[in-house]
Image 1 (cartoon, rainbow, N blue to C red):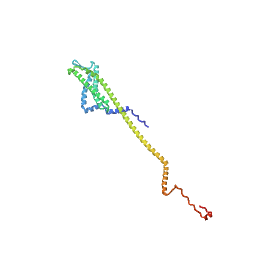
Image 2: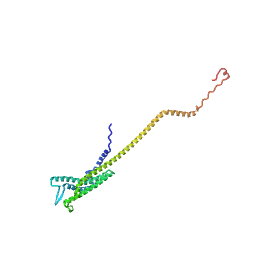
Image 3: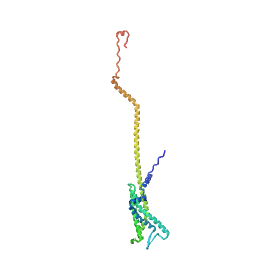
Image 4: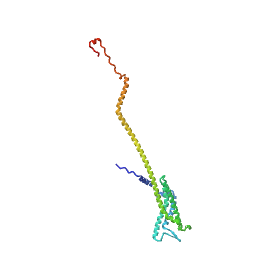
Amino acid sequence: MNPLPKKQSISERVAERKAEARKAKNLNFSSFLIDVKHNPMILIGLGGSAFFTCLAGLFLGVAPRRVGGDILFFGGDGIIDAIIGITFGVIYAAAFPVLGEWGVYYWHKKASLRDEGNKWQAGISYVMLALTAVFMTVTAIFASTILASLLGAFKVYAEIPEAAQKWTVTIIPVGLALHAFSNIWYDHKSKAAEERRELERELQTTEIEAEGRIREAQVRAKEKAAISFAEEYERISDTEAATVGRQKAKNAWQRDRVEFGGNFNQPEPPEPVEELSDADRSNGHHPS
């Protein structure tokens, strides 16, 4: 006999259901291209902003500064300084758009793909959408400010503002921590909501199964009652049918014998006695 399959726990069923939901709600670059195809302004807005946030990351790595009429790069004049500056410039140039522009699109999609009726997910995704939009906008503004100061285009931007320097240095770790925490929180609320729904589904399934078992028990009880009724009727009829038949025959005969003229309740009269003549008495005859 094959063993029964092991019943999955609620956590296992939730994990399996979430895996299926992720496939249905796949969020990647392909989904971004599909949205851009339907709404090109997404690419124009995010792409234009990403150019400036890339500059902010690149400036942070190569450390440009204006000294007199010249623009100097890196923190020193050695080759090691140049390698380190270029390496981190590329890393930061990729990190800023990911945390900013892609973050805006990412939380926009998380808000639209949230679980139905899940207010926690809605709150997390919309708050993060607003924060990443602020991150993206401020970073692009400071990148433009840094670029203007390096080019010397305007007297007001003769020097790189201190706020821009602090922002480009501190925003990356803050953004990483904020994205990580928000994603964990979002997933936790999704899992908790899914577990509650799974418990409700399991309870509903149990109630349906219980109702089915009750109906089956009622049917079996009615079958047993019908069978017991038939068996008891058969037993009684076997033992008492003959008695009932004899009694019915007696009752019928009592009715019929009156019709036949019989009166069996009175005794029959005695036969008449013959009287002998005197001659017969003298001859010794006796009455019969």
